[in-house]
Length: 166
Image 1 (spheres, rainbow, N blue to C red):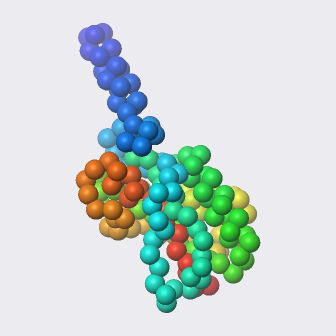
Image 2: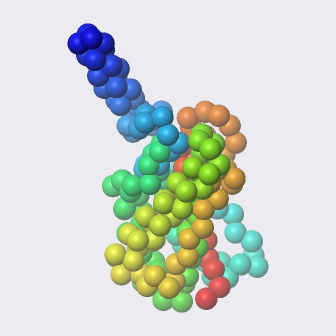
Image 3: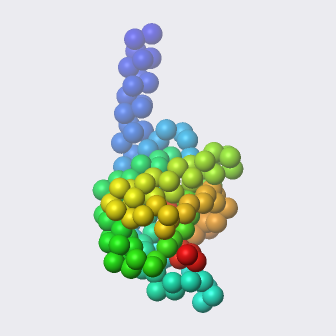
């Protein structure tokens, strides 16, 4: 019995030390995704010319697998986003929470919502008026990248920031 427990603990330790393919630790909880990787490789979501505040300069925030917590990279991006919003007092934004395709649709909608709310709360904590921010979750329904690779999954675990009418 003791040997089984020791083997299980060793396996958990090994799984917990995996990376997500970018060199960043990857959570292996068995749940869908979450946690900000802070990568800025992915371009901001496409905006149509009919949307307000087309010059909105907010960056996308990325999350680790099965996490809605903000890592140092995400917090840095959000600090930049907060500075932009504070400097441009007329700008408003919708924070769109997204997930990769792992996990149920219901779980991913809830996870996307937690991600969007985490980013919003951080921006509010940095001095952005909450009335200028709205949130929505798309779960896994709006992938930025198609595919079933870790690289594709990582690009889909994100919060996009889009301009909204005030």
